[in-house]
Image 1 (cartoon, rainbow, N blue to C red):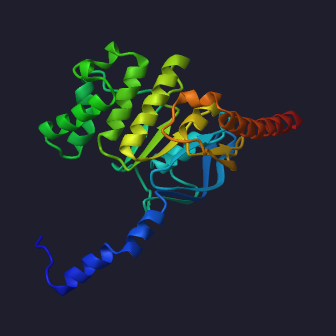
Image 2 (spheres, one colour):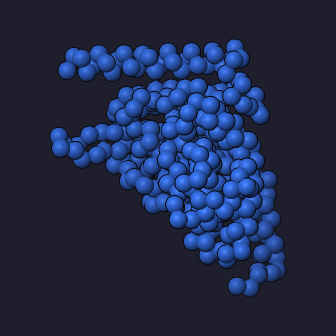
Image 3 (tube, rainbow, N blue to C red):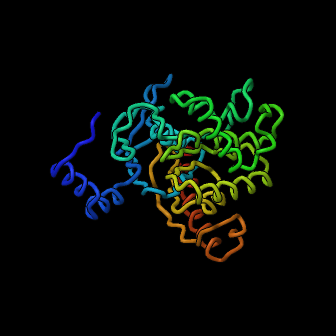
Length: 289
């Protein structure tokens, strides 16, 4: 396609790069969840999993969603990823409605789900190859990410020779290989022991500072949410609703060492008070029924 030339193209370029248009792009949320309801068919009829959930995520923001098991937090994440279909409401990513999975949205699950027959390098290079990159280009992307996650010595290793934490690092790198602007993470450290989990949290914070992606992270662990997030969304017991949003105004760069600071402890108490009250309400409801 030939490049446009002449006054009209210059005017279009000036408008596209004007301060007003740039500022407008910055203000547009990276993710918009509007009045989202999700209903599942069960043996006992239809069940409301998520009920009228709405929230925005700003570009580059790190948001954690917490709540009791079965509250619908993973379902919300899957819907943003295009893996679930809303019963009502809309999901927009960077202004476009989500209908199905898309390459600019990366997803990391609790289990790594690596290809066991592929090396670390080939696991990470898989996404770029599927998008049409040459083997050389895909391997270069993979090698950059392998260096970023600190596994250069294991580039040619296979998943069954890696620890759980190392496998999850590979899974995160694989999700980053397509250079997603949005990264969705569903309890990615939930299956790890406490020590490895703390290391992985610190690694993710370092990666976050480098990749500048918008991240939505689901966890049931309040400590993990406060350590990682700019903002925590607390969901109710099912059907899932947003009970409260908590801004985490702890300085960055941040590490798990922040967990002993007074501001952190105060935030944790606020979150736990909301969750305990909701747990008691849900218990009383089930007892009454």
